[in-house]
Length: 53
Image (tube, rainbow, N blue to C red; front, side, top):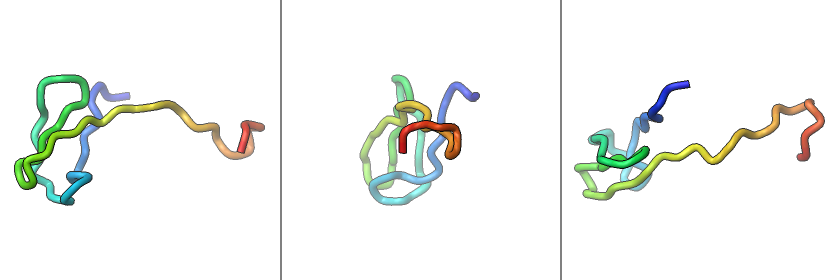
């Protein structure tokens, strides 16, 4: 697994003008001037393994 998740589009405006910021998973969009983070929150069970629905 890679150390950094790379977003391809800004979640706010959809533009691709993204640059990494200081901090874990932090990114900035220079089109709409917003910053955001990308963080993994966990794994979901694979269908058919007996996990909760």
